[in-house]
Length: 219
Image (cartoon, rainbow, N blue to C red; front, side, top):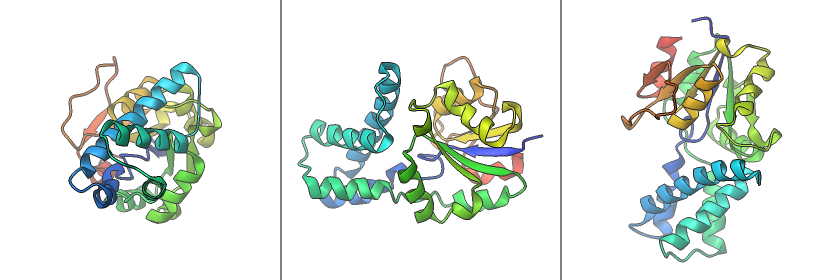
């Protein structure tokens, strides 16, 4: 392939959003997974709705609001101490084990993150995971104040690297994100860890893989 840059989604792709389950379990034994699942679901839903409503707030506020919803919906007490601890945990998400080796293996091309995350959230996660040496850029939707999968978000990568879409590879574990990137012309690698069906959005990823470790063999 003639790919000059590889661009990665952050949450769910490089960083395990459900690594907060253990922290949730400390506060609500037996309910940690349920909190994490609903928290993530409402977080994503809010980004889509806020983009449609043109009522942008950054991802840190979206994340806090989604946590409030999740604990209220599950009828779980959540005071300021619990809320602060969990939001801090989101800044220190565990990277998937193959994230760093994969970024290292792709040293022959430019590498970047393109994420819904707020800049300070992304910076904290990258530093915590030790991924900074293997990234040429960390791009946030905050500069546009609209969330993925709006086409303008993916154009940020084209502008950053001065490359046309066909020379950029995009990697995401989120099917809707993979579809958004394919719609603008990127070569898309969908990490389908759960063997989920493809999104029915009129476009398909170029490659479907089970984990990040497969990626270097396709470049």
